[in-house]
Length: 143
Image: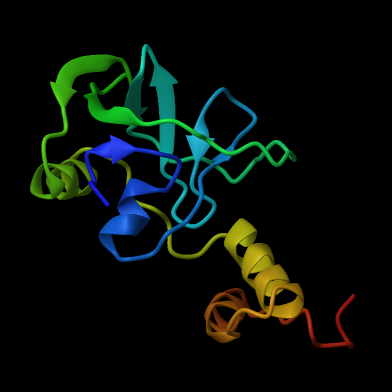
């Protein structure tokens, strides 16, 4: 994987050796369901937005199926003309310029439960989110 090319996989997750398909959200952006990184594709360039998404996805099966160069954006999420040239540049940009992902959110609690319960994924993520919010969907006594 060349981290300077966007081909539908989340570039931030790929840095952590995790292939996560980005999905369309309610805006005209591609968003990672795991880390909420957002990308806007314009003129064959993939602009990494500085703010994170909210997990509000369009429910369709469309996948991104081309390759675009990753590009930085300014503080207002407009292209600044700087192409991301390598993984070091990408890591630095994500760490210093892009809003960091919140570790605990209600959306992550719900998604981790659905992933554990219905997609046969490990329970660890759900337990972590559940303990933080002190909500256990498996507890039949809650309403």
